[in-house]
Image (cartoon, rainbow, N blue to C red):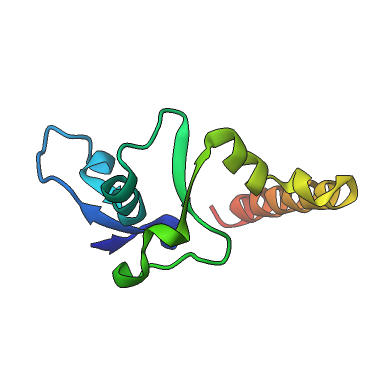
Length: 109
């Protein structure tokens, strides 16, 4: 087991060197979903319900999970869900951060 980016618990499913390294691991919550409900439909992903994220294997249960479309996931995670003014502030902050990072790289190569 390992904790991947975003705090997601993953389990190694193969040591086969012919398999691309990222495909050697699978999220535990997806495995729990598939064990309970069968294969994840095409165009869908399994996510934790809001406020239910955990990386404790004993707490990853089907009642904490949702199977949603990729579109629904994008809508849940976009800055535009906060309204026009907040979305603009988030985009402006990102633009400023990019410029600061660019200047820091120039000063400290």
